[in-house]
Length: 486
Ligand SMILES: NC(=O)c1ccc[n+]([C@@H]2O[C@H](COP(=O)([O-])OP(=O)(O)OC[C@H]3O[C@@H](n4cnc5c(N)ncnc54)[C@H](O)[C@@H]3O)[C@@H](O)[C@H]2O)c1
Ligand SMILES: [Zn+2]
Image (cartoon, rainbow, N blue to C red; front, side, top):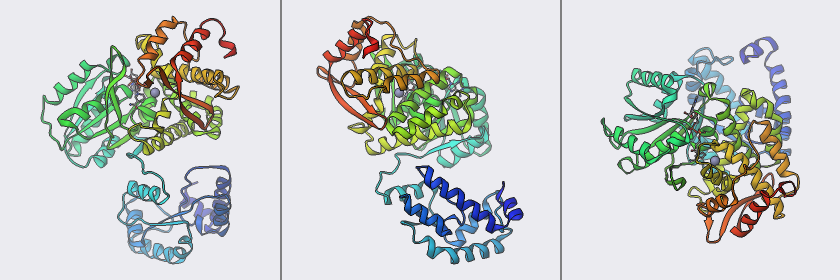
């Protein structure tokens, strides 16, 4: 029920009572961030519940003058805010009544003049965590909303848009909307699909970039999936020794993984992602509306990375994903939102701790040692990246069980989840020499050993150095009919 309507029909007191009841339930049942508007924190029962359940309460304090300006600029009507004077008077009196109580929060942040991302950074730093390496925003609307968001995140300069040709209509409409807002955007079209992540595609972007005006004040904007953000991101890292880049992710894989965290690169015939650079984006926009046209197979491919993130995150995340499996296949908004949020939080936290992958960030390679070997051994044509990762996740869990590192039942449990999400889980029958050859070339190799991410149970994953011989022996056994007992 809209707040105005609820206040009108039930009266503020009744609405507040219901609100407190709901908030207390959420405080008991959920983890994460709970954003409380209005007067919820004024309720002593809510404050007591927050303390009891171990929540950290943060008061984002805004002086009434700025709060009134924001309320008046917002098209959504607020109860009791019907004009500048009334609004200011109301907010003044609320501030006077609540400030002292709210200031008992664990943390008080004065937010006047700060952008939302600065407020978040301030909170994160005050809580002793690393700030996010870059902002990430979910966008629901169409081309006009995208143009508006791009105008906000890139306030000046020209835009060089590196876009997947499959999104022609949406990108052309966005460029027209940008032009209507006085912004110059030039498009370089590229193909999606792993086969397009090549040196020649990169060289094509370089050539077209200099076919028109370009200078250091310009920004590269990629619009597409992981192939386009990897390729366009690397182009941005190298054009004029580095132009800023914004990724607009249009595949689930892009949203939950590829566009986040600043890794860019391309494939060589010798192997996947062998050339690349770390180049952090100015911002990542997860363009939710664009998922409507994404084929099911590509959607499922992105879900493999979400399962990986659930394994890195913990039991609660894994159980939630299992509960959401059917809804995810039907692409229900709430389930998709939870999956994207889980993966975004998991990846961003690891990247924030270790931007250059000298330590913990490598945990994101869970399932990728075998996954990458499989993609390369099958010529990048048979499996999508997420499909190879799904098989790699199960392989890493089975291998972990054999080493005594993974709890019994984990491999079967995760295989069942991946299968429900429409992903393959079984290693194909390839000659063992091919595996050995591919694993030896792995970037994560260290001498005669491979750095493998192993998982004991959800939330307990660690990097282990495993001798290549042990991997070899496991692969040999895996292809001699004894898969069931590893
Ligand atoms: N840099 C990183 O950190 C990182 C992380 C994970 C994956 N990756 C890379 O990402 C790549 C895989 O990403 P991907 O699955 O997004 O691949 P992709 O970019 O090839 O997109 C998949 C397919 O969907 C099409 N497409 C894109 N958006 C669409 C839309 N909205 N509607 C319809 N079709 C659309 C593409 O043309 C392509 O055919 C791999 O190369 C992988 O190595 C990189
Ligand atoms: Zn991956």
